[in-house]
Image (cartoon, rainbow, N blue to C red; front, side, top):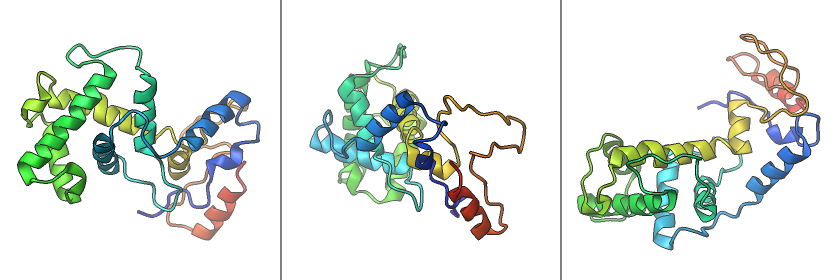
Length: 213
């Protein structure tokens, strides 16, 4: 897919009025997170990384997003959402059971670990999970479709889109404090927001976005 915001790097805003000290500290911590597990076992880590690659593919032409590490960090800190779905176990238990069940389904269906399957078979298992069509005993009383919606997709997508590389790919400037956003109308943007390429002069758009601060 072509880059919709060529030349745009949200991190160029780091030392501008767009971001305050608190924003800089939060983003610096995300960027410094090592791409290694602290909560997941080695087997869970492989399954989680493979699932992240299918749910939230890496933005092309951008620094990679350590999505699995962000999920693992949430689990390591046991950082809940402020609520809990009644038919799901607590955060950590739900993830452990869900990853084990996905692995069991892969081995039952294809005789291989989930991370060893080709993308089409991985997608097929995830789709069946989404539609509640998996039934390995490893799920116990946890509904597969609910785990997919409220934990697997929810956590992976939320954390993937909380990373600066993804912000750059979608042309978002991140939190804007103290500067704020002013031009909120349709097809209007502030001077410090990225310009979107519409099949016009890509070089001109890239040059404009490299000046955005």
